[in-house]
Amino acid sequence: MTANLFADIPDELPEEAVATLAASDHVRIERIVSRGHASAPGFWYDQAEHEWVAVLQGSAQIAFDGCSQPVVLERGDHLLIEAHRRHRVVSTAPGRETIWLAVFFR
Image (cartoon, helix red, strand yellow):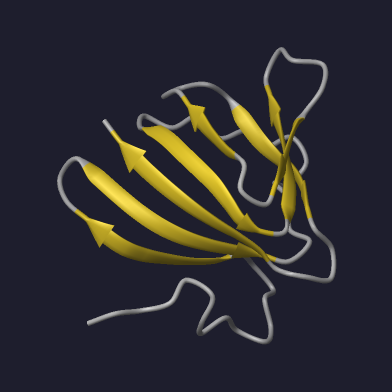
């Protein structure tokens, strides 16, 4: 069965929409849809898995603990975040969808 990464996006997004597309014991692939979302103030992700993330549509800024400037991601940009590298989403495009493809692996 086929599916489309740009389909079935909710009209209302009070929180990011996260859908697991595929998963096994060692890898998980997610589609994440943001619309002006950001990490809560003071919150940092510190995950046990590596995360490869690509922005398919929209834009985002990701801050890394200890770095003075956030990384800006535009459509087509991708980034590998090593396990336990503390990071947070500073911003995503306001008023339009930012669609991420995220692959988590050990």
